[in-house]
Picture 1 (cartoon, rainbow, N blue to C red):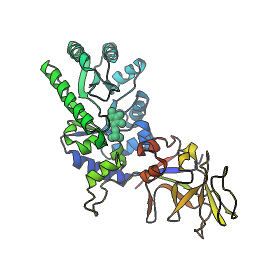
Picture 2 (cartoon, rainbow, N blue to C red):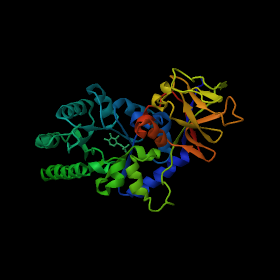
Picture 3 (cartoon, rainbow, N blue to C red):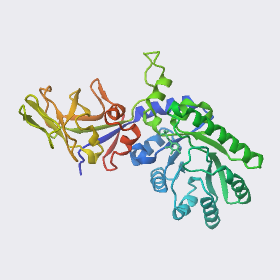
Length: 384
Ligand SMILES: *Cc1c(COP(=O)(O)O)cnc(C)c1O
């Protein structure tokens, strides 16, 4: 079945981003490619094999289901790390397939140990320490228990890493909190080491921390948004790319494009309302194009009367309310516009470009949110 829109992933853009990341973190630091949220909307099934082809050998997911998808498309040839949810039931699959997973409470550690004993293989655990995010992680008052338990069960537990996660490294307003987290993480590691417990690696940095706080990189960085060619925030972009130098170009390239086509064109008379209700009034005679993409396809309703897309190399405005499956554009200025013309929702056309972030500015959504809302069933194809 043909879909009403499709997504392109650019191989050369991804290669560029990988090179930038490698150059940034250096040889002594590994990169885990975070592919939760269906690879930030890029599609695990398409994105992961492409990333693998370009050298990626470590992937992070939120849950076990995503890990299973990554495992399928990589045939067990990469390290896969689950950073969030895994049920006791899924633990067995994880241990059998040497999937790494975060452990942030004693209950899971106990179950991991029991599962490893049952399966006859070690559990590959990354121990998450609570340092101030207050989401998941072992509290300080548990550290002694934790240390003793791991030491007592080293036969079943492979201590891959100590890790933590910062509460908003993309925003300087959180600097003190992030700095304190870094200190507490160091303190935790020191405590463990003193008691004779060492992990194979340490990791704490997401994209923003990797860029802003080089010390947070340690042995491995968990990179999500940057690999796809987006900055975690405007602030990280500006502080990294140095706007004093106006010629300094963005070192990242957007991997994703999202395209559809003109479904139909009609003339509307001055004084008529366009679309549902009366949110858009034609103040002159107009030509209107409908595009078969709406909020059910991930084009947010909050882009009503605000969104911009590209047709025939020019920016066109979304007019009226974005419907479930359709949006409308004012194409009055486009003389030769035809049914079937390409419509770019994200990406380039001619010299023009629509980025997810400009999109997000209009709708007040973060890059992260808009990307991950792109439905799973839109076809993803790889282009050069
Ligand atoms: C999502 C996530 C990351 C990656 O975040 P980016 O900002 O996209 O780089 C890293 N670590 C953890 C624990 C995460 O949940």
